[in-house]
Image (cartoon, rainbow, N blue to C red; front, side, top):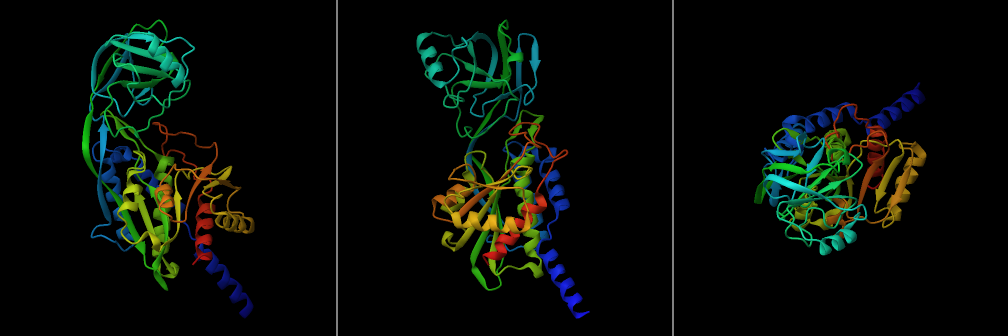
Length: 420
């Protein structure tokens, strides 16, 4: 009987250690992606509404704050589209978000403009530059181009006369706001070829913008005090912001990017807040705004830390963790081979996720500013084709997979236990 009691006790301890709450994570995700959050961007204070919700969760779990209200305030320059966003090709009206997106650096623009179709040889930045040098345009012209134009997208390029560009791609147009820190002289629009047939003559636009030199936003930060080493920290981070709104009605929900990461960080916070799960070292939970605008929140934090960065023993950033049928990837795994080996060892023993794939350095999420400051940091994302929507209006929480949520949660808590 004594042996049986011991076995049961051990089993209960194991269950307790790994007690994730996927149902709670789904509730958080549903809230963050709701219309009331306005896409967690910078129209209708979507970022502030999301931040207030996060604070509610921290208070519910009785986490400790470094500030009076869990907020770290800062500001960013931001171009927004809170008003009309209308595009009409000849007599056909297009739907923002569904049929097209407008560059976040676009100026306000209204009127009817001529469409000029570039030849099929104009497919990238270099061929576009040559084409522009060889042709003259009017201030009432929009150039229609098909291809990939990473360098010039959102810019006025070398031609000051063109009113703007229509970039056509054979895929759902996706939006980003990283170039919204200023207003360019040219308007760029992404769409699909079927909406701009070669026989089209004009495009009629009414795009209203509002630029903020100093838009006030905030990081949201809380921690659980460690039992034996309260001045040493393990950090879980994620960005809670997304793209916001394009016009008065269309918003970008941002379920996978990064409602998923925010949800698991809040679940981890709830888990470690329980007295039976109190860690030896302190664990801090940092939820950043401004990631989509260029890692603004995490960069600000590393320049204005609420406790010494040297106190962070290890940082795990979680971004786009809603899938997992193909496993997970660890960015900076090649920089910290010991970390990758430890995660792999844990996974080989428990089979939490299908595969752990290593990746080198990449400044593609909020781990990067910390890594650049010398903090030992990794970034984890999941892989799988069960949810592929990215930076568009289809990244919703409907039928959201959270494929390896339980396994990822257990992998993280098991690893953290090993470095306490």
